[in-house]
Amino acid sequence: EGYLLRMCSGADEWYALRLYRNRPDTRYYGRIHEQLRFPGPAARGSATIRHLGYDPALLEGRQKRDRNARLIEAALAETAGASPDRHSFYLFHHAFGAAGAERAARLGRWVQFVEAHPELERPPARPWIPVGLAHYAWQLSDAGAHAEAEVRARRLLERHGESPLLHLLLARARAASGDRSAAERHLASLESGRSAEAYHYFPVDYGLLRRRGQRLLGEIREREGRLAEAERCYRRLLDQDPTDLPAALRLVCVLVQMGAYRQALDALEACPALLD
Image 1 (cartoon, rainbow, N blue to C red):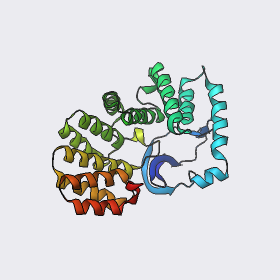
Image 2: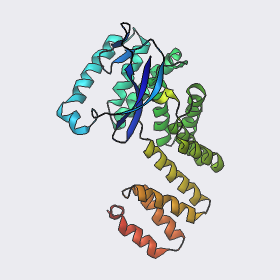
Image 3: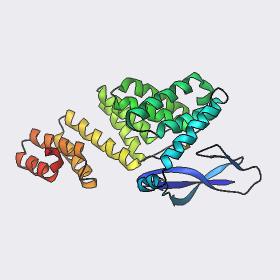
């Protein structure tokens, strides 16, 4: 009846229902970020769509962010106390319409709402539920709360299936606790790139996730004293992205530990931003 097609915007990719049979009972609904009310089954198609709507210059030129914010706030007022399902949808997009500390605060409020309505997370959950919960776990991990992030990531794996983001979260948590072999198993799962359909709703830069996983592997090798392997990890990262400052810094540190001072100076000169 329909096909989920791969969408690409810059480095981000996700899947969306974009090709479907023309039926009278197929309708879009919602004030903004309209959702397709589609009665039939959908398979994954082979075509790719290049999505230009998130281009920063285009967003600014059309003042789309301001328009979206106004529409979402109106939708939140309409759905408050009436429909937990629809309200959670607009709270989700309200969070991801912000950045930095404001996004973190809004995402936290969205999680509180979802946890106050446990029926929202029961499979088959709406696609924005596992996506938002995975990003909240990532937010916790970034703040150093690895134990809580790990609990949430494992719950998501059990309920909704695999995602590279979850495997990176679990690798981080296991590495922080000293369980390096488990961390490496999750990094291997991250590299395989398997992702359940539950997580296809939201744009993800899988290349970025893999680079972060490679950096974590380098850090694990450093802690184990396997410095030559750590050096190779960081050099591979810098071959892919010469502006990767964390990888450049770790490479310099590893080379100093190895006594390769001339190479360490060369690495510093290759990345002047480290000296700013």
